[in-house]
Length: 241
Ligand SMILES: *Cc1c(COP(=O)(O)O)cnc(C)c1O
Image 1 (cartoon, helix red, strand yellow):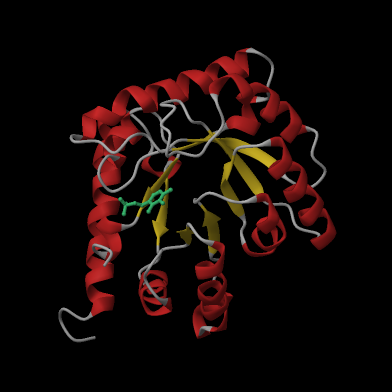
Image 2: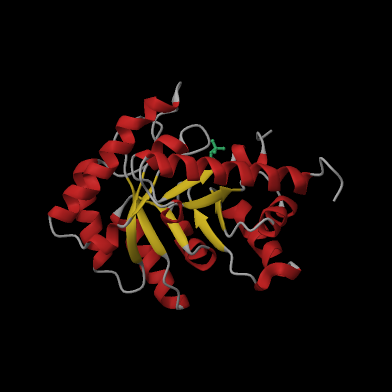
């Protein structure tokens, strides 16, 4: 590969992000292997996904069904597609797209309503799939944000536990855009505390093991606060046009 070729840049960026994950985990006395790096490939094409796969990346995230559809297809047609690659939906999901989401994604981070959960479960059951889901928490209550209000999360978690196909795996948050990485810390702490409170309240710990929090700007802070999944786009693929 020519120096500076897109694949080489992606591989270099990935190595750097992995190193930063290891340092942040070390600082927090955590095992870096307990943090899953999800490469957010939105707006980038199959070529960048393949470059990341070639560099050892196995988890990818998308935020739109329509964009993801073609890309996931292309990734599976690639010669390296016998490698196990996992796709995560991290963007808002309308319940009328639940069928497609259940067909395409192994993980869905953006469950925020009972209706969506019901439709996802029905679609997954029909297709014989068992997507793992996270409940997106809207702790900041920003007008523009999706996610479930804190007061509804316990009920949603209990409903998810009753599902036939869908597997409850944890919680997710997208905090307000930070000026400084540390601005996100209180939101990450609150998500972890919310998880701990739900576990104390009887939701099985294994069903809330995952905390999906932290993006390019603040993933190290998220790891210090207990993130088990970080969603990193820009720091791997470059800025989006
Ligand atoms: C785009 C996106 C990311 C990645 O953002 P970067 O700042 O590019 O790392 C993470 N999570 C969600 C939900 C996103 O939509």
